[in-house]
Amino acid sequence: MNTPTKKVLSLSIAAAVLLIGCGKEAPAPASAPKAETPPPPPAAEIVKIGHVGPLTGGIAHLGKDNENGARLAVEEANAAGISIGGKPVKFEVVAEDDQADPKVGNTVAQKLVDAKVVGVVGHLNSGTTIPASAIYNGAGLPMISGSATNPALTEQGFKGVFRVVGRDDQQGPAIANYLVANAKPKTAAVIDDATAYGEGLANEVEKALKAAGVKVLPREKGTDKTADWKAVLTKVKGKKPDVVFYGGMDATGGPLLKQARELKIGAVFAFGDGACTDKMGELAGEAAENLICSQAGIPVQAAGKAFLDAYKAKYNIDPILYSPFTYDAAKLMIAAMQKADSTDPAKYLPALQSIDFNGASGNIQFDEKGDRKDAEMTIFTLKSAKVTPLAIIKGGKSLTLDEYAALGAAGK
Image: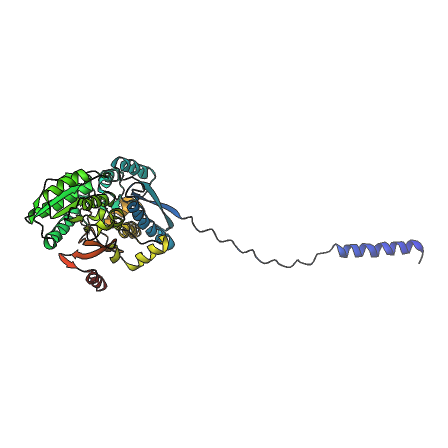
């Protein structure tokens, strides 16, 4: 084979190899199908619940106790993972300080309306709650007080106003009748702090004492900021009353009682729920021993164990007075929203009006005015600087704490 022939043959072989190399490639290994990323869960709808109470001033301890109860209820609801209207919801407490001042109360009430809360737990004092309720009513917001006891609150005809404690026209006769039965007074002095709560409760006590045949001296007054009661008490001392009732809060009731004992006034001293606290022992010292006081509801000691344990675990203190009721107030609102499957106040209000709810303070149902049906009354004394229940009045019957607990265990 000559050289040109060899060259042609080499070129032919090289071309063939090149053609083979450029032929169809072997298929690449099939890759695994990509897993689809699930869509993120829908964002929780923020639902704001307002709370108002005095967080500064002489009764800030009671305002904070109220707020603690409402916050605990909201935190428990969030932990339960509630959905309403097909959407997960997260509740938030919007807290305001009304300083126990009606003018400030109206200002913060409007602030809550502007913040788009769906309901309000509060206020603490009747004097702030009553005027603020008109603002909430105008905005269509349900309001539940855990402590305002003046009857006028629910006599206004507002369909969205409720309370989970009793009224002063129930509390006043309860403590007056206890005093009549146990102290057997012939003459009584009545003093109040000139607030809607203090004066209103004092009026009810005075009416009940007079109806029982007790002579009631002309009314004496101070204010919710009075610190020096000596002039008032000196007048009272000269009339030698057997009992003295004070309508007001513990911040003023404690100094009144201490100064009365300093003046050697030996009468039985009695107070309403605003001064039915351990704080009286701090403010009046030994003078507070054996005072008599009342509460328009069950005592803290009779509240549900789950609530008491949860409160202590969260705040490392025991509840003071009204927190079981503000806890229930917040729970009631949330339960009504669940029942109506809506956070719209206009839609859940009917569910709230007809609710039948077992809370930390017992079974709660409302009458047509928004008052709690069959509200209990409790009479206390103070022993070793601690308020101690003497009797719980339910359905006209006077029960000990153990007897009341037994009724609860029996589901009655």
